[in-house]
Structures are given as C-alpha cells and as structure tokens.
Image 1: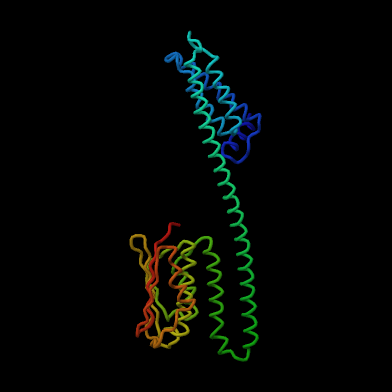
Image 2: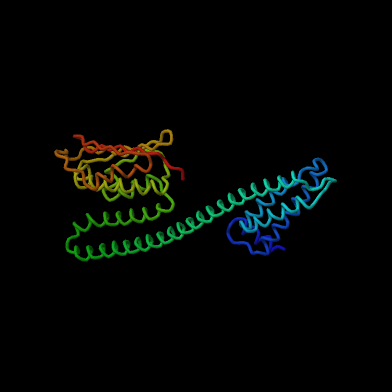
Length: 320
C-alpha cells in the first residue's frame, strides 16, 4: 500500500509516468467516489445524473492521460444513464444531457492533456538548463583552477628572473598577489556574494592602504552584482595606477557609497593625480564601465576633472 502511495505521489507531481494498473485503479476510485456523491445529491435533486462525474474525469485524465480520461468519461456517461437512484427512467432528455456531458468532457480532457504536454516540455527544458548549469560550473571551476596555476607559474618565473633586481620585485610582488586574490574573490562571489569593502580592499590593496579611503556602511553584494562591480573597480584601479591618482606620489582615492530606496550609489573620487590633458577614443575599458551595470537598471558616469577622475555608479540592488 505504501508503495502505491509513493508511486501515486511521484506520478501526480509528474516525476514518473503511472502504470496502467495504477491509472485504471485511480480512475475506478474516482468513479466510485463520484457515484457516491451522486447518490447523496439524488436525495435532494433526483435529476442530477452527470455533474458529479466531471471531477472524476478531470482527475483521472490528470493522472493517467487522455486515454484513461476518455475511458472514464464513457464509463461516467453509462453510469449516469444506467444507474437510477429514484423512480425516474432514462428518457430523451437524459440522452441529450449525456451528449452535452461527453462534449464538455472532451473539451476538459483536451485541456488537461494540453497542459500536461506543456508541463512535460517545461520540465524537459528545466532539466536541460540544470544540466547545462552544472556543466558550466565544472568548466568554470576548471578554468579558474588553470588560471590560478598559471598565475602561480608567472609569479615564480618573475621571482626567478628578478632575483638580482629586488627593488623591482618588491614593487610587483604584492600586486601580483593582489590580482590573484581578486580572482579568487570573484570566483567565490560567483556563487554567493561578498561585502563591498572586501571587494574594494582586494582591488585597491596593491596600491597601499594609505592611498585610499573607504566610506560607507557594511553592504553585502549579491553574486552577479559583485562580479560586475569587481570588473568596474578593477578597471578604475588599473587606470588610476597607470594615469591617475595612484601614478602620483601624492595621489589619493576616496570611495564612498550609500543605499537609498533600494538603489546603490557609489562615488569614485581621485585627487592629486596628474592632470588629464586629452581623452582618446573609447576603448574596451570605457565600454565596460558604461555597460556593466545595465542589467541592474544602472549607469556609470565618468568626469575627468583637474583634480582627477570622478566616477559615479548607480544601480538597483537585486534581492539576494
């Protein structure tokens, strides 16, 4: 009995196809219950012949498919004509009701079967998406593993090549380590998320903690937004190291953020950096800054002031 109940639950959820034995047994049970309901209604309204059988046809079709549904509809019609719980006998009016009952049952069976096919297709699509997502995770994990090994190899090669240049090695060692730490952070947030301060410290740490100031409350970033912001912060920090505040001995960076009405506002403000004289054509980095926050109903605006780069970022905070 317990096995039948488990099989019924699995079939009702759509996880498995019912056996013919189970489908027929369920249809018979539906007919018995419908007949009992009809008997009860006959004590009040003797002229109720087919109405109690509609649920029986519906549920039998939902579990067993259209063939079981058609058989249940035919059996229901025959029971409605043959069984009499009052002194009334079958007449032309009852046969007319029978025809109407079968037409409505046919429409109901078609609707249920159509819904079953849509659900089956949706379940198949969901299954493929889950499998593809699992495959993507395996590929990404493998790529991240290879990237980490390659970063370690580059680090070792540079250390070996710059043994006689300790001053140069000291300048690049902590930056390579920070880049590797940022890659690890992005790999982690791809599945979970991280705090915005951890993200900024990972990106800005190589330039010295006295060169920047972070001003804002603790804020957990969902995974997808964290990855997008990591790409933006990395691009801005790289530009600051090459041309902006971090390329000047006195340069300083202030990053502040606030949350207002479910929207995140971030301000990147560089000071005491080299004056920007000419702006070239927009490259990949600029296009990245402009488009990275669009999926979050956001935007990025960059101003090249005499005091340094001023960038504002706005976006909607997605639910975790």
